[in-house]
Image (tube, rainbow, N blue to C red; front, top):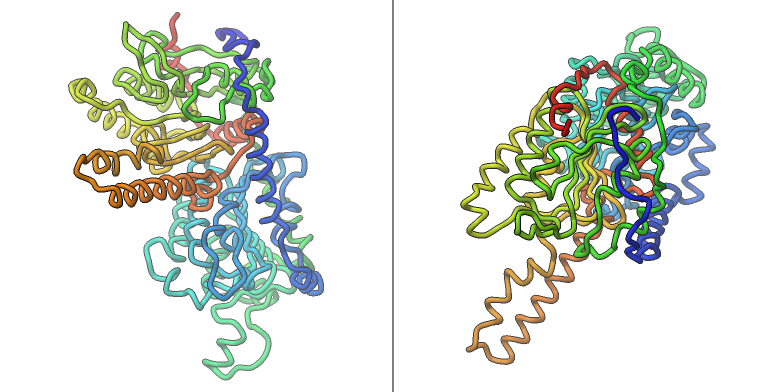
Length: 549
């Protein structure tokens, strides 16, 4: 492609860990399968008898079958079983980034297989985060609603706080003010707070079975003595209250109506901003299984990784002569301009100085700031590829003012009007380096991991050594006390290793999703298409000036 050069090499240094990596990915896939389909036969029979689809089936029926569907927060809820109740997989809600009638959309669907689609502790935060994804990508939101409101036995944990259920409606109002389209389909009982969510939307379709009401049948009977079916039928809201636009006979027709509404939105702007025909990478993604070691202490060539993700395996290195521990590449994904910023995981020698793999130094930090600033100015989305251990430490680091340079970078990537960013934690995101490379607190559109990813302040052995090694070095320590400290040290390592497992990180919400190595390219394509779907400004001036001409 014009202006670009070949990246990486077709000859790879084999890490020999392909089988281990694929085993870890297989474990993740099995968990996802369990989450999606582990429902009792009686539950599924009850839903079918009522003439309704499951939330999973609704999501599948809404989205284009030939396009990827990326689940957000799919593991959330694994670490939070509800005492005395069926464990709410996904915290009772499915959130996804998918394609509907050729348009990237965020989809939010209440899981009607547990507690009538109620919101559990953690559900509001998950929904708000999905809305944040829509805001940062400026894509429409589609709600598939069957929600009994808060799960009342846990109301104290989900009602009043700043991040409780009310935060959903606040964020919906912010999306509305930003001009982001929101539409909803109501499929069953939609009560109390569950009713506000669709009412904050631009258009609503209801099935004939659906109800939309402030209080359900039980509350009406208890509070007002009105015994009977739940109020707020579809007929009421279409013909009298004006809350809904349309009533349809069943779930399938409601999905068709939602698709018809989305199809009438402006077509994606990708074709306008595409500067070249899309090309698949010239080097296969399957090579990533050979390139990446499972052991995070071992290095590899990150340029060879990028070469297997970008169009035609081509790009231009930016600021090539400074900050060698950072690689910044101007390239294309699906024919659309993008910048990749990655750190090197292997040791390198620069000016007679050994730069440790995964560590950030002054010039590399400043390099990232300059590239991020130029990308923001040009309106070009950024993909961050992390395998970072943190900032350099010691007397030289303090003399160079690494903290100041880090603060300058954080100010740059905190820009509220920032272009969309995607953060990939390839193997590790540790310490301040995780923040500096657009970690979750700095609001990328998505933070994704792999089956190798670990998100932690420091590695478990390092953490345990920091806390215990000086105590164990005490020459006056008796044998019993030493054995007790060594046991505590080992226990801490094991606890931290378990907490840093990628599935546990995803269950906490630290990672939005776990993606197989051979699917990273597809995710990047989805991201850039979403980033360019709504009108943006692209004037590649500053980025061009950062490449060696």
